[in-house]
Length: 145
Image 1 (tube, one colour):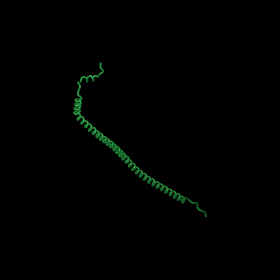
Image 2: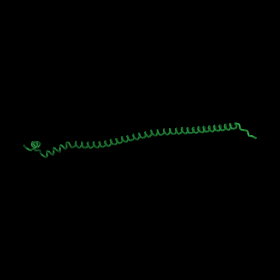
Image 3: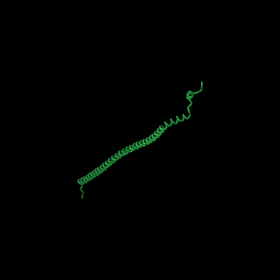
Image 4: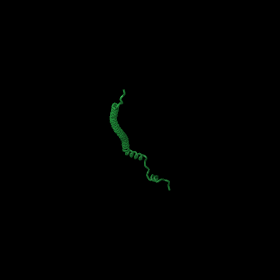
């Protein structure tokens, strides 16, 4: 058995090739495929650049959408603020209305109190007059002379 690998056995089967012929074949192969490979390299480079531009554009659009979301949040906050402002305006109107009603009730209560006091005073005066009249009508003992 030989320690030679199967590849070595194949190499041994080939006739010896001239180095110049190998170089010429290599150059021919390279010259045949190199322009296509260079065009492919340029196309891949251009594609990579286009993808980078596209990626940057997509990221800018994403940031715009995020800004739109922020604007929607801001709009929602303004809407809420308007809602609560309207509530405050309504509460203020209600408070003013209640203040007016309270003021009217206080004035009415004061008038009623004054009227009641006047009535009591008039009754008291009438009672005093009546008592005075009764005193005058009651028989007085005659003075002796």
